[in-house]
Image (tube, rainbow, N blue to C red; front, side, top):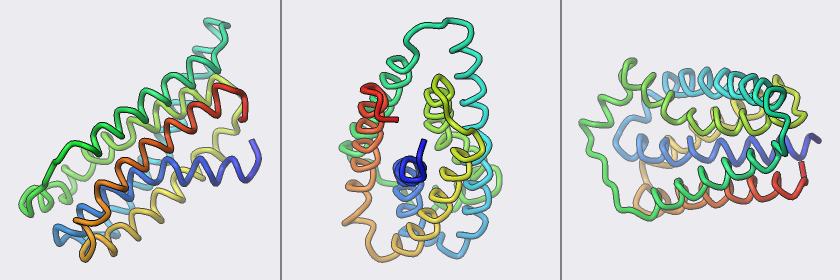
Length: 183
């Protein structure tokens, strides 16, 4: 993978955090942004490493055309994100407060990182540098979390749905690019 590939991967995966951060910022939780950034960053770094390890082990065990499996996983994950963005879901302020407490934040970060496990798994089926992948994902996730929480206070109604749909579409594109061998 080239540096451009890592940047694209980081932007695509980090966009999930942007969507959630927009919601949290819009619900008055921007003052907790450093806590959110810390927890999200840790999960976004370590979960892809676990996924890459699992993907590598699977690739060795099954020895099939693993790039197709990885691509299908990413496309499926992307389509799920697009559908979730189209549905109308509103969070209230109390829920946002609960989510940004330590326990809720760890649970939220774990749920958000599920896609990173799948991405890491699919990349582990190929030849990716695990630390570079994890660093790129964590960097952009933290950056987008910070930006989303700051922007969310003023623009939730305009950007939340677009961010979710965009993140899903980018995952579908990443899966298709992997399926045709672009990375």
